[in-house]
Amino acid sequence: MARRDTTIATAAMRSAHRFLASHVAVTAMLVAGHCAIVGAAHAEDDHFGITEYEIACMPCHGLDGRGDGEMAHSLSVRPADLTQIAKANNGVFPAAKVAEMIDGRTAVAGHMQREMPVWGDRYRKVTEPGESGAVVDERARGQIDALVEYLETIQEK
Image (cartoon, rainbow, N blue to C red; front, side, top):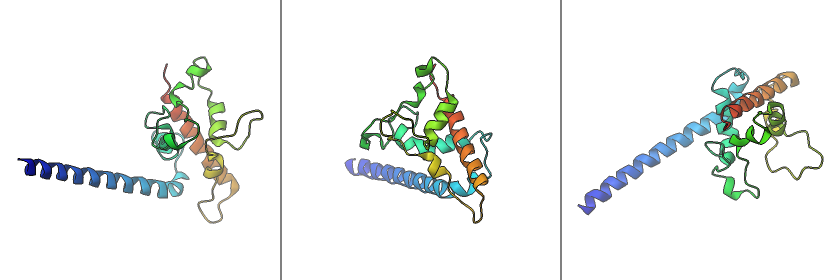
């Protein structure tokens, strides 16, 4: 009986590893292809914001945005609980302020060193030869806006 249990456990582990490997492969394809398709996507796309969150934020902020992502333990400052933004602002979600924080290119005088990556720089990459700065900026703004819209949906009341 023990041998059968071991065989079942081994099969279950193989199945879990295949699932994990396929999930990693799909995630890698999403990340690799993300910049190429993002020009066609818009903030109005219902899935664009959550896709941005999964790619850019989830490793640190976690699946639910509570600051408990896989990378959180390796950071010197715990990532913010993104579900509490509105609560910390008297029940109002400060979309413009959140967009500025995500963009990160405008340093705020008097604040401590920034721990979060400057996503504005990362989003403003040329993905097509000859792409204009205006197109790059519009795409970056769309990515940030979609992410901000998604973050607003996960706020706790």
